[in-house]
Length: 150
Ligand code: DQA
Image (cartoon, rainbow, N blue to C red; front, side):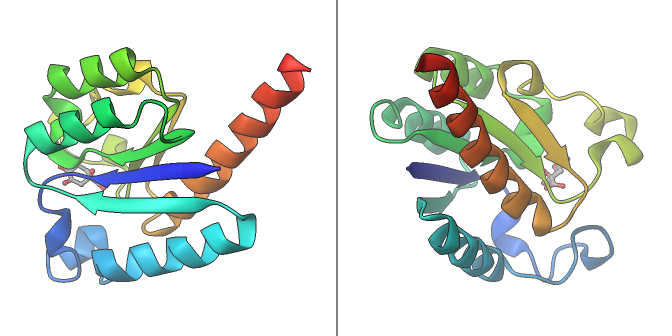
């Protein structure tokens, strides 16, 4: 199983960005922990970050036929990007939305996710563990879909 992990704007600053909200782990540490769990689960992952909406749309488009699932922390684009939402629908690759912080416990403008309705589900508020939980979710979703097919 191959999973694409995408990270949006300002997540490259993790570790020094609002540590009281996002914690002190860097994105490299989050990636490393996720790779360890992926190895245990026998999952191959590619892990990317961009501050550009166009990159994220492009990576989602290119995921078709290459990945079994996408784990997406679209960061601020979560709340603004119809383009990312449309790309998820067009690609039709199962996508799990993740957030480090609990977006519903924060400012009202973060309570609405444009991508949530087109994702399999959402994991929000568990810090770096959100990524691990998302990985376990996509592995289970794939297992459940396989069971339905046979
Ligand atoms: C975030 C939450 C978003 O509202 C915010 O814009 C981010 C990070 C999170 O992981 O908690 O940049 O996606």
